[in-house]
Image (tube, rainbow, N blue to C red; front, side, top):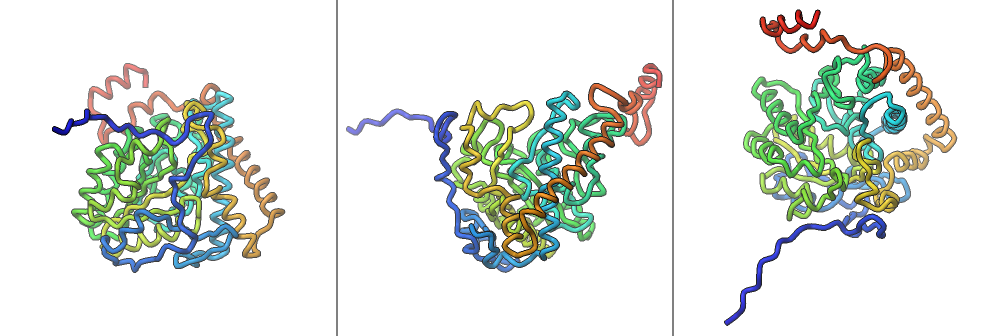
Length: 410
């Protein structure tokens, strides 16, 4: 009689721990230009392979190759480079400000600048993003004033949200940036609902949902996919796979699907993976998905393969859970340096002009910082009025809130 073995539980483990040798052998990278570009009305089952490959445009020599290339002019690429550089300089100054006690909290985008910066350029005015806390590039690329962002980060008297949100949880209807929620994954179902409403109204605006790799383990992620696929909502479902949720590597949240993109296949949603550090590839895939949505062809799920170089936030120490040199081993490189190299290859940029641009952008960021700090910082200067606690919540203030305001002396 055969003896039945005892059961054992499988718990995914990262390939390497702090002090070990970084290992990205599990990241299978397709040759630049090798992944085909399907027609926009392709049936999801015909492009299953795209959920397991990585769409790339820029090769190792800085050349744009393959069917996804050729969508952006030199001027548009130069703008994209400056936007990424501006976001990186903004990050550095705000991280320093947090260390100086001028704000309570900050979250960097280091290494992920191409994802949101390029994506925003693929949308139209009036489209709505439902972002997480690491998509400030959507605002930077849409020329949202840095001073306004800094005012909120400092929680000063000019804070556009009047102290009602965490420092980096921006909100701007005008710039298609829905208010960020601190609760994980709630924005995914909200984006699908907004897109469905747009379709019901026979409007022409689409939505974009954003989520990190770790948050795909939340139930709202799956609920959003059910509704998006059932009602063919005009929405782009973005997953930013930066390899690390806070202290947790991607193997925990991904489950047994192999890739995050593959999770869309079971819902009948076209799913693609793209090199998130390739500005040209991100734009091309986003534009393709946006066209699908606008033509009533339904949702598209996109996984951006990138790497979180910095800490999860200023409250996190990544050296406790990953090798300090891991970011240097990341095989898809730095998005800023890759686009810079491409523009130099094209003959429209140079090392000298790049250095000059870095200095100009830093001056611009510092000037914005001075303007913001003139309105106050976390522990100095002007603050939002206590009166603001009571305002802007109800269309008509109910009696009990009015009494509370009067009791507070406002």
